[in-house]
Structure formats: C-alpha cells, structure tokens
Image (tube, rainbow, N blue to C red):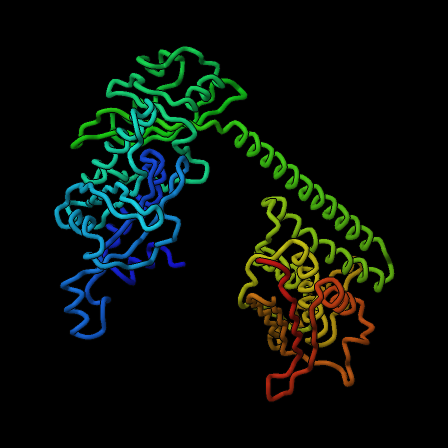
Amino acid sequence: MPTPAELALSHTDLKPEELGHLQRLLGSWSVLADLSFSDLLLLVPVRVDVAGPDDTLRESAQKDPELVVLGQMRPNNRPTLVDQDLVGQTVNESQWTLVAKCLHSGEIVRGSIHHPILGEQVPVENIPVRFEGRIIGALLRVSLAPLKGPTSMYERTYLDVFERLADMVAQSAFPFPDEDVGTEEAPRVGDGVVVVDADGRVEFASPNALNAFHRMGIYTQPEGRRFADLDIEESAVEWALATGRPVVEEVERRPDVIVLVHCIPLLSHGVVTGAMILLRDVTDVRRLDRLLLSKDAAIREVHHRVKNNLQTISSLLSLQARRVGDRAARVALHEAERRVRSIALVHEILSRDPSDQVPFAEIVAPLVQMAEDSVVSSRPVEISVHGDLGDVTADVATPLAVTVAELLQNAVEHAFGPEVAGNEDGSAGLDEAADAAGSAPVGHVDLTLSSDETALRVEVRDDGVGLPEGFDIEHTESLGLSIVRDLVVSQLEGTISMTGLPASDGGGTRVAISVPVRGPR
C-alpha cells in the first residue's frame, strides 16, 4: 500500500509544503471523523501529465480531470459507511460532481449521494482544503442519514465543533502549522471532550470528560466555570486561547492520577472563539512507563555489575601473571585476561543501553586497541578496519567479540616473524622490540566487516608469513584458534575458513567467518 507521500509524488503536482499541510491533516483528522460521526476521504486533483501517455488521453483528462484518494478515516463512535479501502484509487470529476464543485469554487458544498449498499441517499459534505490561498484538496464527509427526532446535547455539540473546525480547514487555519502528528496515546474524542468559550469558561463536558474529572477528585459541575475554579491547572487552556495554537500538557491532580490535556483552539477568520479540550486518563500508561524505566535501570545495573566483576577477574589474572615464573604460564594467563576483557566490553555497552541490540562498531575500536597494545613481534603492525556490522544482538555480540579479539591477537603475534623475548612480568622487551622495529617493514592486518539480511561476515587478512604446510583449522592444536572455531561453529552456528594466500596475492593469511542472522535485526 503506497503512502500518501508516494501517491502525491506519483499522481499530483503538490509542492513539499502543501504535502506537509495535508500530512498534518491526515495526522489529526481522527478528531474530525469522531466529531462528525462520519467517514472522511481526502481527495486531490491528479496532474494532467499522468492521466495518459498520448495526446488523445491527455486531452480527455483535461476535459474530465481525475481525483486521487490520498487518505481515508473511519469514526470510532459510529459504524462505517465506506467499508472498502479507497486509498490510491482515482475517479473522474464527472463521477464526483460535488467534490469537483467544492474544488473549483473553494466553498463548502453539501448534498447527498446514492449509497450502493444502503440503496438510499446519504448526506455528504465537501470541505475545501486551503493552504496559503490555494485549494489543494477536498475533504469529503460521508455521514448517516439524519436522525429522526431531536439529537442529544452531546451530538449537537460535537457537530457544532466539527463545523467550526471544518470552517478552519477551509480557511487554512487547521491543521495548525506547528502541531506534531498525533501519537497512539494522543486523546481522541471518545476519551473525553470539554468545550470552553473565548474566556475559558466550560460550555460543555462529555460524560467521559466528567469521569476524568471524577478520577481527579472533582465532583463540581463544570459548566460555567473555568478550570481554575475547579482547582485544575489551566495554563494550557490560557495559552491556547491567548496564542491560537494547540497545547498538550499532562495534569497530575493527585500522585496516582495523570490526565493528558490536549487544547485545540477554535478560530473564526483568525479570531479565537473558544477551544475544544480532549482529556485522556494516562495514569496506567505512565505507571507502565515507570515500570519499564525501573526494569531498564535494573538491567543496566546488572550489566554494569557483570562488567565490574569481569574487570576484577581481568585484574586478578594480570596480577597473577606477574607472579608466575614460568613464561608459558604467564602467556596463558595474559591470554585469559584478554578474553575476559573482550567479554567485559560487551557488558560495558549494554550497561549504557538496556536494549538487546549492540552497536558492534563500539566494540571493534577497543578490540583493535588491545591487539595493537600487545604487539611483540619484530615488525611494527598496523591494523585497519573496513565496514561495519551495524547493530547485533547481545547473544551474538559476546562470542563474536571474543572471536575478533582472538583473530587479531593471532595475527599480530604469529604473522610477522618470531616474538621478541619478554621481561619477567610478561611484557615485551621494549628496547629490543624498538631496535628490531626500526629496520623491519610494517606489517598490515585488515579487518573487514559486512552484513546483509542473511548473514554477518568478518574477514581478517594479514600480509605476514602465511600458514605452515598442511595447516587445517579443524585439527589445530592452538588454544586460541580452537576457541574461535568452537565459538563460530557451535555457538554462532556459522562457518569459518583459514587459508594461506599466494605471493602473487600479497601473501599472508585470510580468515573468513560467516554468521547467519537470527530473527529480525
């Protein structure tokens, strides 16, 4: 189903600011449908050059222009009379003569049309949608046949407010230019309506509005009183009446009652004549919001504590490594400490954002820094990162972070010649490494990341010494590569290949990993 913007682009000659006006109308016209107890259609003239490919069809279109339906709205308080979805359909003006008359005259046109299902005439009202002096569309209201006998007070009030808003649409005063498009929690007419005059005195309050007052602890009849007389904060009403602009505000009457107040000023030729106030009790919604915030805070705190515990473990392993005399044991402890730090990085990010998605780019940078800081080869090493994986789920980010850290560490340690002898604390002999690096060529490690809807792809490539003869990652005795293989194949359900590159291709080693995307990303 194309959007109104897409339909406008393909069928009309609307300017961006005119389309913006219509989109604001579509975002707020549920109020009009409920107040008028009617179905609403928004029709816009089709530009001539899309009506036909040749001169004959273009001439026919000029004689009988077409209209396209950009939007459709059904009321919440009455059965619909337009059960078909008409958005995107085009009709000739000769078939919708009342709409055409409205568009050409710029006046509200009332009449009736034959309803194919009811088999009788139904009232319609065609309201010109004006923007900066130009008629850019027509709002078609399709209502039920007039009721037999007198209507109720609230129906008469609703229809009167609708007519005032319809005049504002025709005068380019509604929708308001600075009003945001309505959200799901925005009040609707059924939630509660209060109508006030130009002085802010209540003229009408619907039964649901009275219920909202009662939940706020107010049982005084509101008619003839201002909100301040009812002991309700009335700054929103005063501002709407003074400025002629809509206002949305939350009123907390008691600690356990929160009411959302949406004040819509009613204007006649630029003069504020009153306001319609929509009330919605959002106490339960705000209670849920607070529970979610508390839950998010608890989740962040858990990740923060896990990160702190992992960092403590990392520090203990580092301290233990310094006290071990055997060099192989020191190296093993340092490797374990590095793996713990890789996992801690993921929890550090999750402690800032409780969502299940982790921006992997924020993990890659510190992993690269860790690998560069641990370079102990006889050659200086540069690590370059290309691409990004975007956001990945937390259950993928943790093993993938450890995998990337292991591959980068393996490259800087083993791809560029023999290691320089370390000191007793496990660190490299800095003087020896500096002397060796001064004359050795720079080694390069490229980390390439990419993703699509099906898989995450990681490639680590170096221009080092390559792989020994007969190497097979499936039968490697290296603990680091064994961890990588098991994480990719068993935990991530992916694939991994590790191959030596010929000298014609620059030499070195290439590791390619592909991890299937699980669920929506």
